Each structure stands twice: as structure tokens, then as C-alpha cells.
Amino acid sequence: MDCDIKDRGLAEAGSHRIAWAARDMPVLKRIAEDFAREKPLQGKRIAACLHVTTETANLMKALKAGGAEVYLCASNPLSTQDDVAASLVVNDGIPVFAIKGEDNKTYYSHIRSVLDIRPHVTMDDGADLVSTLHSSYGAWVKEMIGGTEETTTGVIRLKSMAKNGVLGFPVVAINDSQTKHLFDNRYGTGQSTLDGIMRATNRLFAGSAVVVAGYGWCGRGIARRAQGLGARVIVTEIEPVKALEAVMDGYSVMPMAQAAKVGDFFITVTGNINVVGKPAFDAMKDGAIVCNSGHFNVEIDLPYLESISSGKSTLRDFVEEYVTRDGRKIMVLGEGRLINLAAAEGHPAQVMDMSFANQALGASYLVKNHGSLPKDVLTLPESVDREIASRKLEALGVAIERLTPEQEKYLASWEQGT
Ligand code: ADE
Image 1 (cartoon, rainbow, N blue to C red):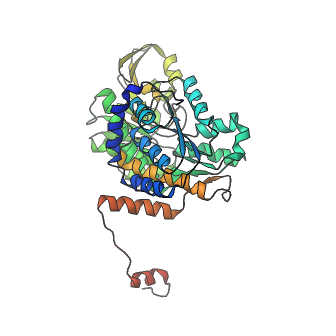
Image 2: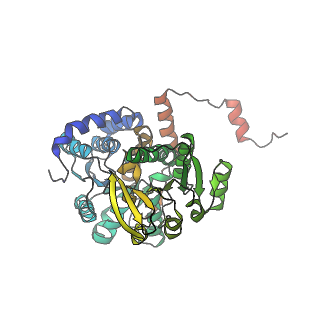
Image 3: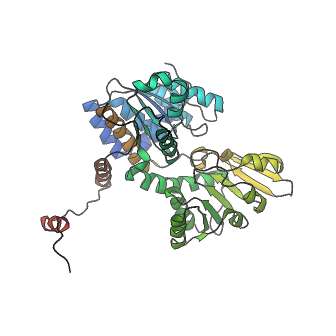
């Protein structure tokens, strides 16, 4: 089988960890069982560009159970779990092109390897697959059924493609499902980001000042978890409504240049470039720790930090110390790439269960509605969100209230007032 992975010998270790994650993915498991019976993806080639983790492995197995031919590459050079890649190849016959630590050239050659299958459906996390398909495989675009996109950053890129009239097929924005962003972005990123920082540094959060750049769902989750560990949380934000929400959630809100003077940890989750740049690096304290949990490694202006530094050295795995010419030491984690997947294992399976239930149902939705969907960025119907939430609650053993006929009638009426 054509593939490019680190070491097939890691397959057994990978299979145990994939099974461990599967225990916490009951919604995806039920979908896989439905898929195995109904084969909604029969004969379809799916090119997937996702973080190669234990949770992703369970999604790949579900798609294969649904009849798809699945090829997988990494959506970030540092996020691959090599044992998982090996297990997918050896135990599941799924071709994988991903090696942790691959350089940019290899990263893109792996993307081309999965696109070479001439996919019917793409499954992206960050939109590198869709953008490469449009730029280098233009002739195939019109044969596509559609794509799915996992993350906020990818959805923004795709919306820009749609707005500029270049998006050649429908793409389902998985991130727009409530059962994705309310849980994965908030609780998943909240926990896994702090997990990554702790594994990389083994530093104490209690009593530290943690600067969170961006108060979207990811920023909200990180701020809450950092506060729970005893940190003083400072939020930087450009949107007035979100900034106000951060104030009322109990955090200090201020511009980055001011926060830089007091922060011990800096965590970026904005999706924008150079959020920690010259004004921040010039003001930062000796010993500050800087990292990113946004999709791309653009949020920290490393070229500027390099330009004011006399040298850098690796102190621990994922910890690089820059010594500035004025004698300060600034620590950058995971080369500014998403720290939760570089130094830890990404979000726990309990939340990826819902994200990947959306991915699996998104792929079957595209196939089922082939030909009738616009070439645009779409959201899955609300009924899918409700179904996933209901299945998750059921798996958790949580029962909820039902409207009585009297209550239903009341909600549908307008006559009854004070
Ligand atoms: N993104 C964040 N966490 C992830 C995980 N565990 N698997 C795949 N993608 C992720």
C-alpha cells in the first residue's frame, strides 16, 4: 500500500490508544454501526487532511465502514501521532501520509499524495486540501461532490473563496454546528491547550498572569480553565462585545502592549497574524512563556523575536529559549504551532466524538444531496445538531424534559399575555 509514515512497528501501541479513545466516542460508534449497515459512502473516495490522532483514527474507521475509500494526511506538520498513523496503515488498511515533525515541503507532498486519488469528497482542518485542490488540480474541481471543514480558520478561508467566486463545490462548515464549536472549541481547546503548556513546561499556573489573546469560543475555554487553576487571567480582544463579555466574566481586559508588561504566559487563539509582535516582545518580562493554540503558526511574530535576539537554544522538548540583546529570556513553545497538538494529544475523545459525528454525517449529507447543494459554505441542518446532542446525552445517561401538549400549545399561541 502506498503510504508515508514513520514506523510500521508502532502499530500495536497505536491500536491500543485508538481503542482507548473509542470508549469515549459513543456517538461516532453508533454512526459507524449505521454506516456499516447502510453504506452511505459506498465507492466514494475521501481525501482527509486532519490531525492524525486517536480520535481521527476512529473517524477514518467509521468512514471506511460506510463504504468509503479513505486516504489521510496531516493538517499540521507537528500534530501527527506516529503510532496512530502506523496502526491505520497496518491494522485498518487505510493509507496515511504523515510523519510528526515533517518539514513544509513534505507536508505539501503528503497533501498532494491524498489528492492524487482524485477524491469525491475532501475533509479538511484548515482548508489546505481545498486550497491546494483549487490551485493545483483545477480540472478535478468540477468532479467533486463536496468537502467538509473542521475549524474556524478553515471556514474563514473558504468563505473568502466563496465570496470571490472561486469555490468550486459545496463545503460543509463543521465548525458552525453547535455540537462542534460549543464543546470542541470551548472545552476541548480549553483543556488541551493548558495540557500542552503543562506537559511542555511543567510550570505552575496558580499565581501566574495568563494573557489570552482572543475571546472566541477557544479563548473563553482557555481563560476559564486557567482561572480554575488559580491564574490571574488577562484577555486581549478587538471586538467590543466579546471584550465586554470577558470583563463581565471577571477577567482584566487591556491592549497587548500593556498586558505584555505583566504576563507570565501568553496564549494566542485569534486566527490572525502577529498578535504577539513587536509591541509585546519589546515590553515582555524576562522569563515570559509564549505559545499559540490557533490553527496556523502565524500569530506569534517569530521573525521579529529572532531579529531582537542574540541566540536561541532548546531547553526541553517544545521549549525554545530566545535571549534578547537587552538580556531578557523569552520562551516560545512548539515553534508557535498549536501547542495542544504539538506537546499534548489534542482535545479529549469526549468532545471529538461530537465534532467527528458532525464530520461523518457531513460527508454522508454531501453524498446524499449530491447535485442539489450550492457551491458555497454550508451549515448542517439543525436537526443533525439536535440528533448528535440527543445521542450524546443518551450515552451519558442524562434524561431531559419534554414539552407537554399544553406547553406546546402555549408556545405556539400569541393570545395569552399578562
Ligand atoms: N483537533 C483538536 N484536537 C484534536 C484531536 N484530538 N483529534 C483531531 N483533531 C483535533
